[in-house]
Structure formats: structure tokens, C-alpha cells
Length: 355
Image (cartoon, rainbow, N blue to C red; front, side):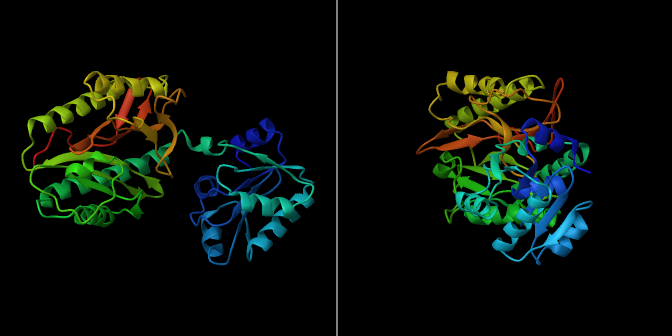
């Protein structure tokens, strides 16, 4: 039986059927984790099409869906067009934010007489508010991140490279049950920490360096995300100043966030503190983003996002200050938005640690 929310999309957008191509939406709608293929949805038919590498997995995971094995792009199009002819489909919704032009053109050429209507982010929005099973997986994934941070504090030292620290974090997460990392681990030391998305390198950590570690893992398909910045050795006065401003901004935003606020309003709480301290040129990214099956989901905490937060949305809260040629600080927690506040899923210490 078709999900009621998808039926509403069909009616609202005046569609006869929907073609799902985004692997995260495929996973959410069907339970299939393979990520290869298409899902065809109409009021009469729900079909998962994939190739021989995944059909056994699809039959195990996509309960209630018809599984059709296909052989190559031409066969996908032929089968899809056959379904549409059988159901007299005139308008097909497709994920324009996912499919590249050449794929859309191939589908249009192979399905004459069918109008292709862009869905925008309509299917992505099904994933915005998390249910209890999703929240359980998110809690566990973030807990594994906490364990990794606890372990890295015991072994990080001058002379280790950024790549070695990243490898230790990833090993710890997998050792504690993670299937994979949820994004490329960031470890940035010294002046590299002034780059928000620095790539770990062979640079050796030196005594007195800031070390920013941004990492996460996947449990049951759901992502975690956390960042901590420490000083290896002793912090100087400027490091302490920057760190404390970022911490103050993060704590203020956490105190403010709740259902009913706009993403831009929460962002402003933290941004005002950083800007008033004279670092308005050193915080260029948004305060946070949602997390789920994909690491960067909507809505976001940013000056440009005016969407109202709702209960059981996930958000990261991650202000930062990045001073070129000196270094930077980011502190990030992952939270569940609640009616009168939030539930923080990240439990690692946030005071400035000198190790």
C-alpha cells in the first residue's frame, strides 16, 4: 500500500506516478540499502528496479515492493515505460535535484508521450522529522563518536600526523560498531585548523597546536557528526580567547534552540556573539544542518534558512572562528529539537582540553 504522504504528493502536484532515483530516498521509502536502481510509485503499483548484483538484497529488504531485475540503462527505461503505458501515465514526477541531465534526457527519449515534472525536494522532506527508530540509530551513532573522542585523547601527542589521528578515530568508530564513516574525517592542526574543511595530511602535530577533529559514523544507515578542538600541549592566551568565544556562542545557541524558532534565528544567536567579539570575518559558514541518512540534510541553521524548526528534527550546532595564519576552533554537537528546547546527543567534554 502506498505511503499516505506519497499519495499526498501525487495529488498536490497532479502526478500519475513518481520515479525515485536518490539512494537515500530509495532507502527511506523501501528499506533497500543497495542504492542502485529506481523506484516506481503509483497508487496501483510500487516497484523497485535493480540489477542482478542487488536483487537478492532487494527482496530481503524492500518488504511489500515488487522487485524487477533489469540489465542496463536501456532495460531500465523499457521496463519503466512499460509500467507507464499499462497505467496510462501522462505525468511522471522525477527527482531533478538528483538526476543529471543526460539521465533525464535518456528517460524522456525512451518514454514518448510522458511529461516529466520536477519534484524539487518533495521526497527529501519526508525525511525531515525523525521517528523513534531513526532517533535510536542517531543516538547510537553519536555515542560511538563520543567513544572515539575519548580514546583519541589517550593517545594523541606531538609527532603524530593528522592522517594518523584520522585513522585512529576511524578505527575506533568501526571497532565500536560503525559500518563506515559518515563523511571524510577532518583532522586539522596548527595553522591548518584555520581551514574549516581541511584535508588531513602528513603534517605532524606540534606542541601548542590547536587540533580540530570533525568526524562521524553510520549506524543502521544513519549518520553522526561531531567536532572538538583541543590544544596539544599548553594553550596561549589568544587560543584561550578564541576558544572561549566559540564555546560561549555554541552554549548560547543551544540554550536558545527549540521548536518554533527559525533556523536563521538560532544562527543569529551564535553569530552575534562571534561578530561582537570582532571576528565577523572569521565565521563564514552556517551554524548547523540537519543529519539523517545523509550527512547534510535540510533544514539548516543559517542566515538564509527561515524554515521553522519542528520537534524531532535533527540539527548540528557548530560555530567556529578561523584565523588565517594562526588557527581555528569549531565545537559541534548534534541535537534533537524539542518543543521547549533540545536533547543533546553529544556528550564529550567541551571545556578547552590541553593534552
